[in-house]
Image (tube, rainbow, N blue to C red; front, side, top):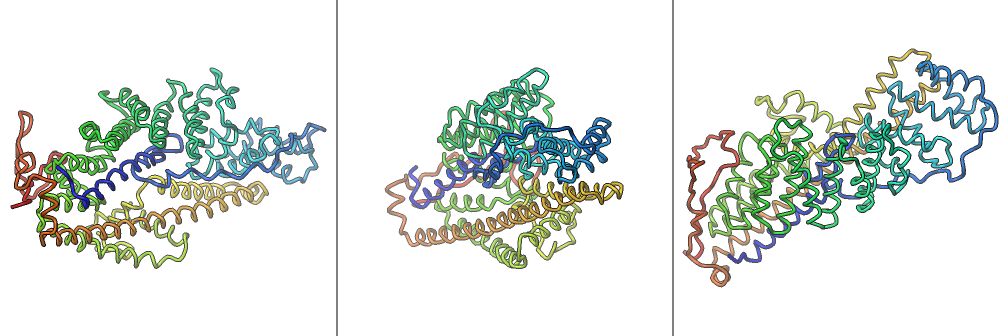
Length: 573
């Protein structure tokens, strides 16, 4: 069958969507502090290289020891050895501020131990602030190299928005930079630093460098599967389908067929299948793509993505009954909170392609009826917020309302002034892991602030306590602004997408009117077999493992993914 130019535009869009989704695969799972799945969920913030952290402020050699420590430093180090970290921190902060007259080398020693004290006290943001100062001084600080392992430890406590990956990347662009840690007693630390370094160079778009770190991680490391996944994504970003497929297949071979996988293992397996399906689709291996998408189970958070994307593959091979069946699954009340307006567009395109113009018009009209009010509500709501801080507060209130069960309360017609149906749409747009990690970061900072308030007043009022609070408040202010900006961009993107879909429905309507006037008859006659009914679309058959059961308006969970909608071609009749 030769598809006309109108349909080709939609097919091109489908290919671009799937290519882009895999290319963006990066950060949506919290295995250390990052997650490789958001890109697969369509997070385009993951696609762009991260901005480099500030350049080191000092390039001079470190100071040489030139005198004994002050009494304050000696006392502080004794407190540290006794694990009296609060008392040690108070003294060390005085030294760092220059109150004791210590030599520069001793001040740098005090600074390093101050960071360690804050870490042991579980004031992780303040510890990061100290270690960041050291890392930015590069080799100008005596403890520059010793700080690296503490950054690795902080990466387990603070989420990715804290920016630790960017600091780790300051330590070199070659695996040789980490050779001092390649010893049996520090094997886990070595693997963790290799992974963090790989993540940094991935974010910077240096995919070859990133792979050198990912591929150097020990086979028995718990981070190996993370590294294999990111190795595959680096090849995807470089449009190298074959090595990308091999990387993802390693994950499949590791987990497929195994019983009792844990949550993380299941998720990596599903991500690998999803990645493979998208690669096969982009290379026009439709059957292989469909087989891979079918491996994503209903229990997976990527199941609906797989169902939707698979419907495009069925469309490509003219298997419209399966494509429409998948769309029927997406519209199940089980997935009321899902948002796949493209599926409705595809449904209209299928009806149009089969010359079922009345059906296509009904689908388009219903889409406009459903989403024109949604767009208007979203636009009106957006105008209420003047800055990122206000939008952050809206996001937080919305998350709390949803967590408190507002969507389950069917008597509640509006939530934060928005109709329930609009809230479903907004929730889908603001429910990605990158955004949620930013929210988690703000909440973590607030918990650290509360923890400080419960410390003894003598510590809270000391310069060390004041520094901790200042670091928390500064980081929190930046995090709130960043989170609000990210949420606003997601929200605005949602508005743009809805408008784009509405524009596409207008295009479909125009083509329907042209067809009804007979302007497409000549093109159809030249490029298609007129009057032929496609049996595979008009009839639904079963095999020895399945039975045909007519849909009677009631959804059953065990039927999801198995729907078929017969469609008969009416062109030329």
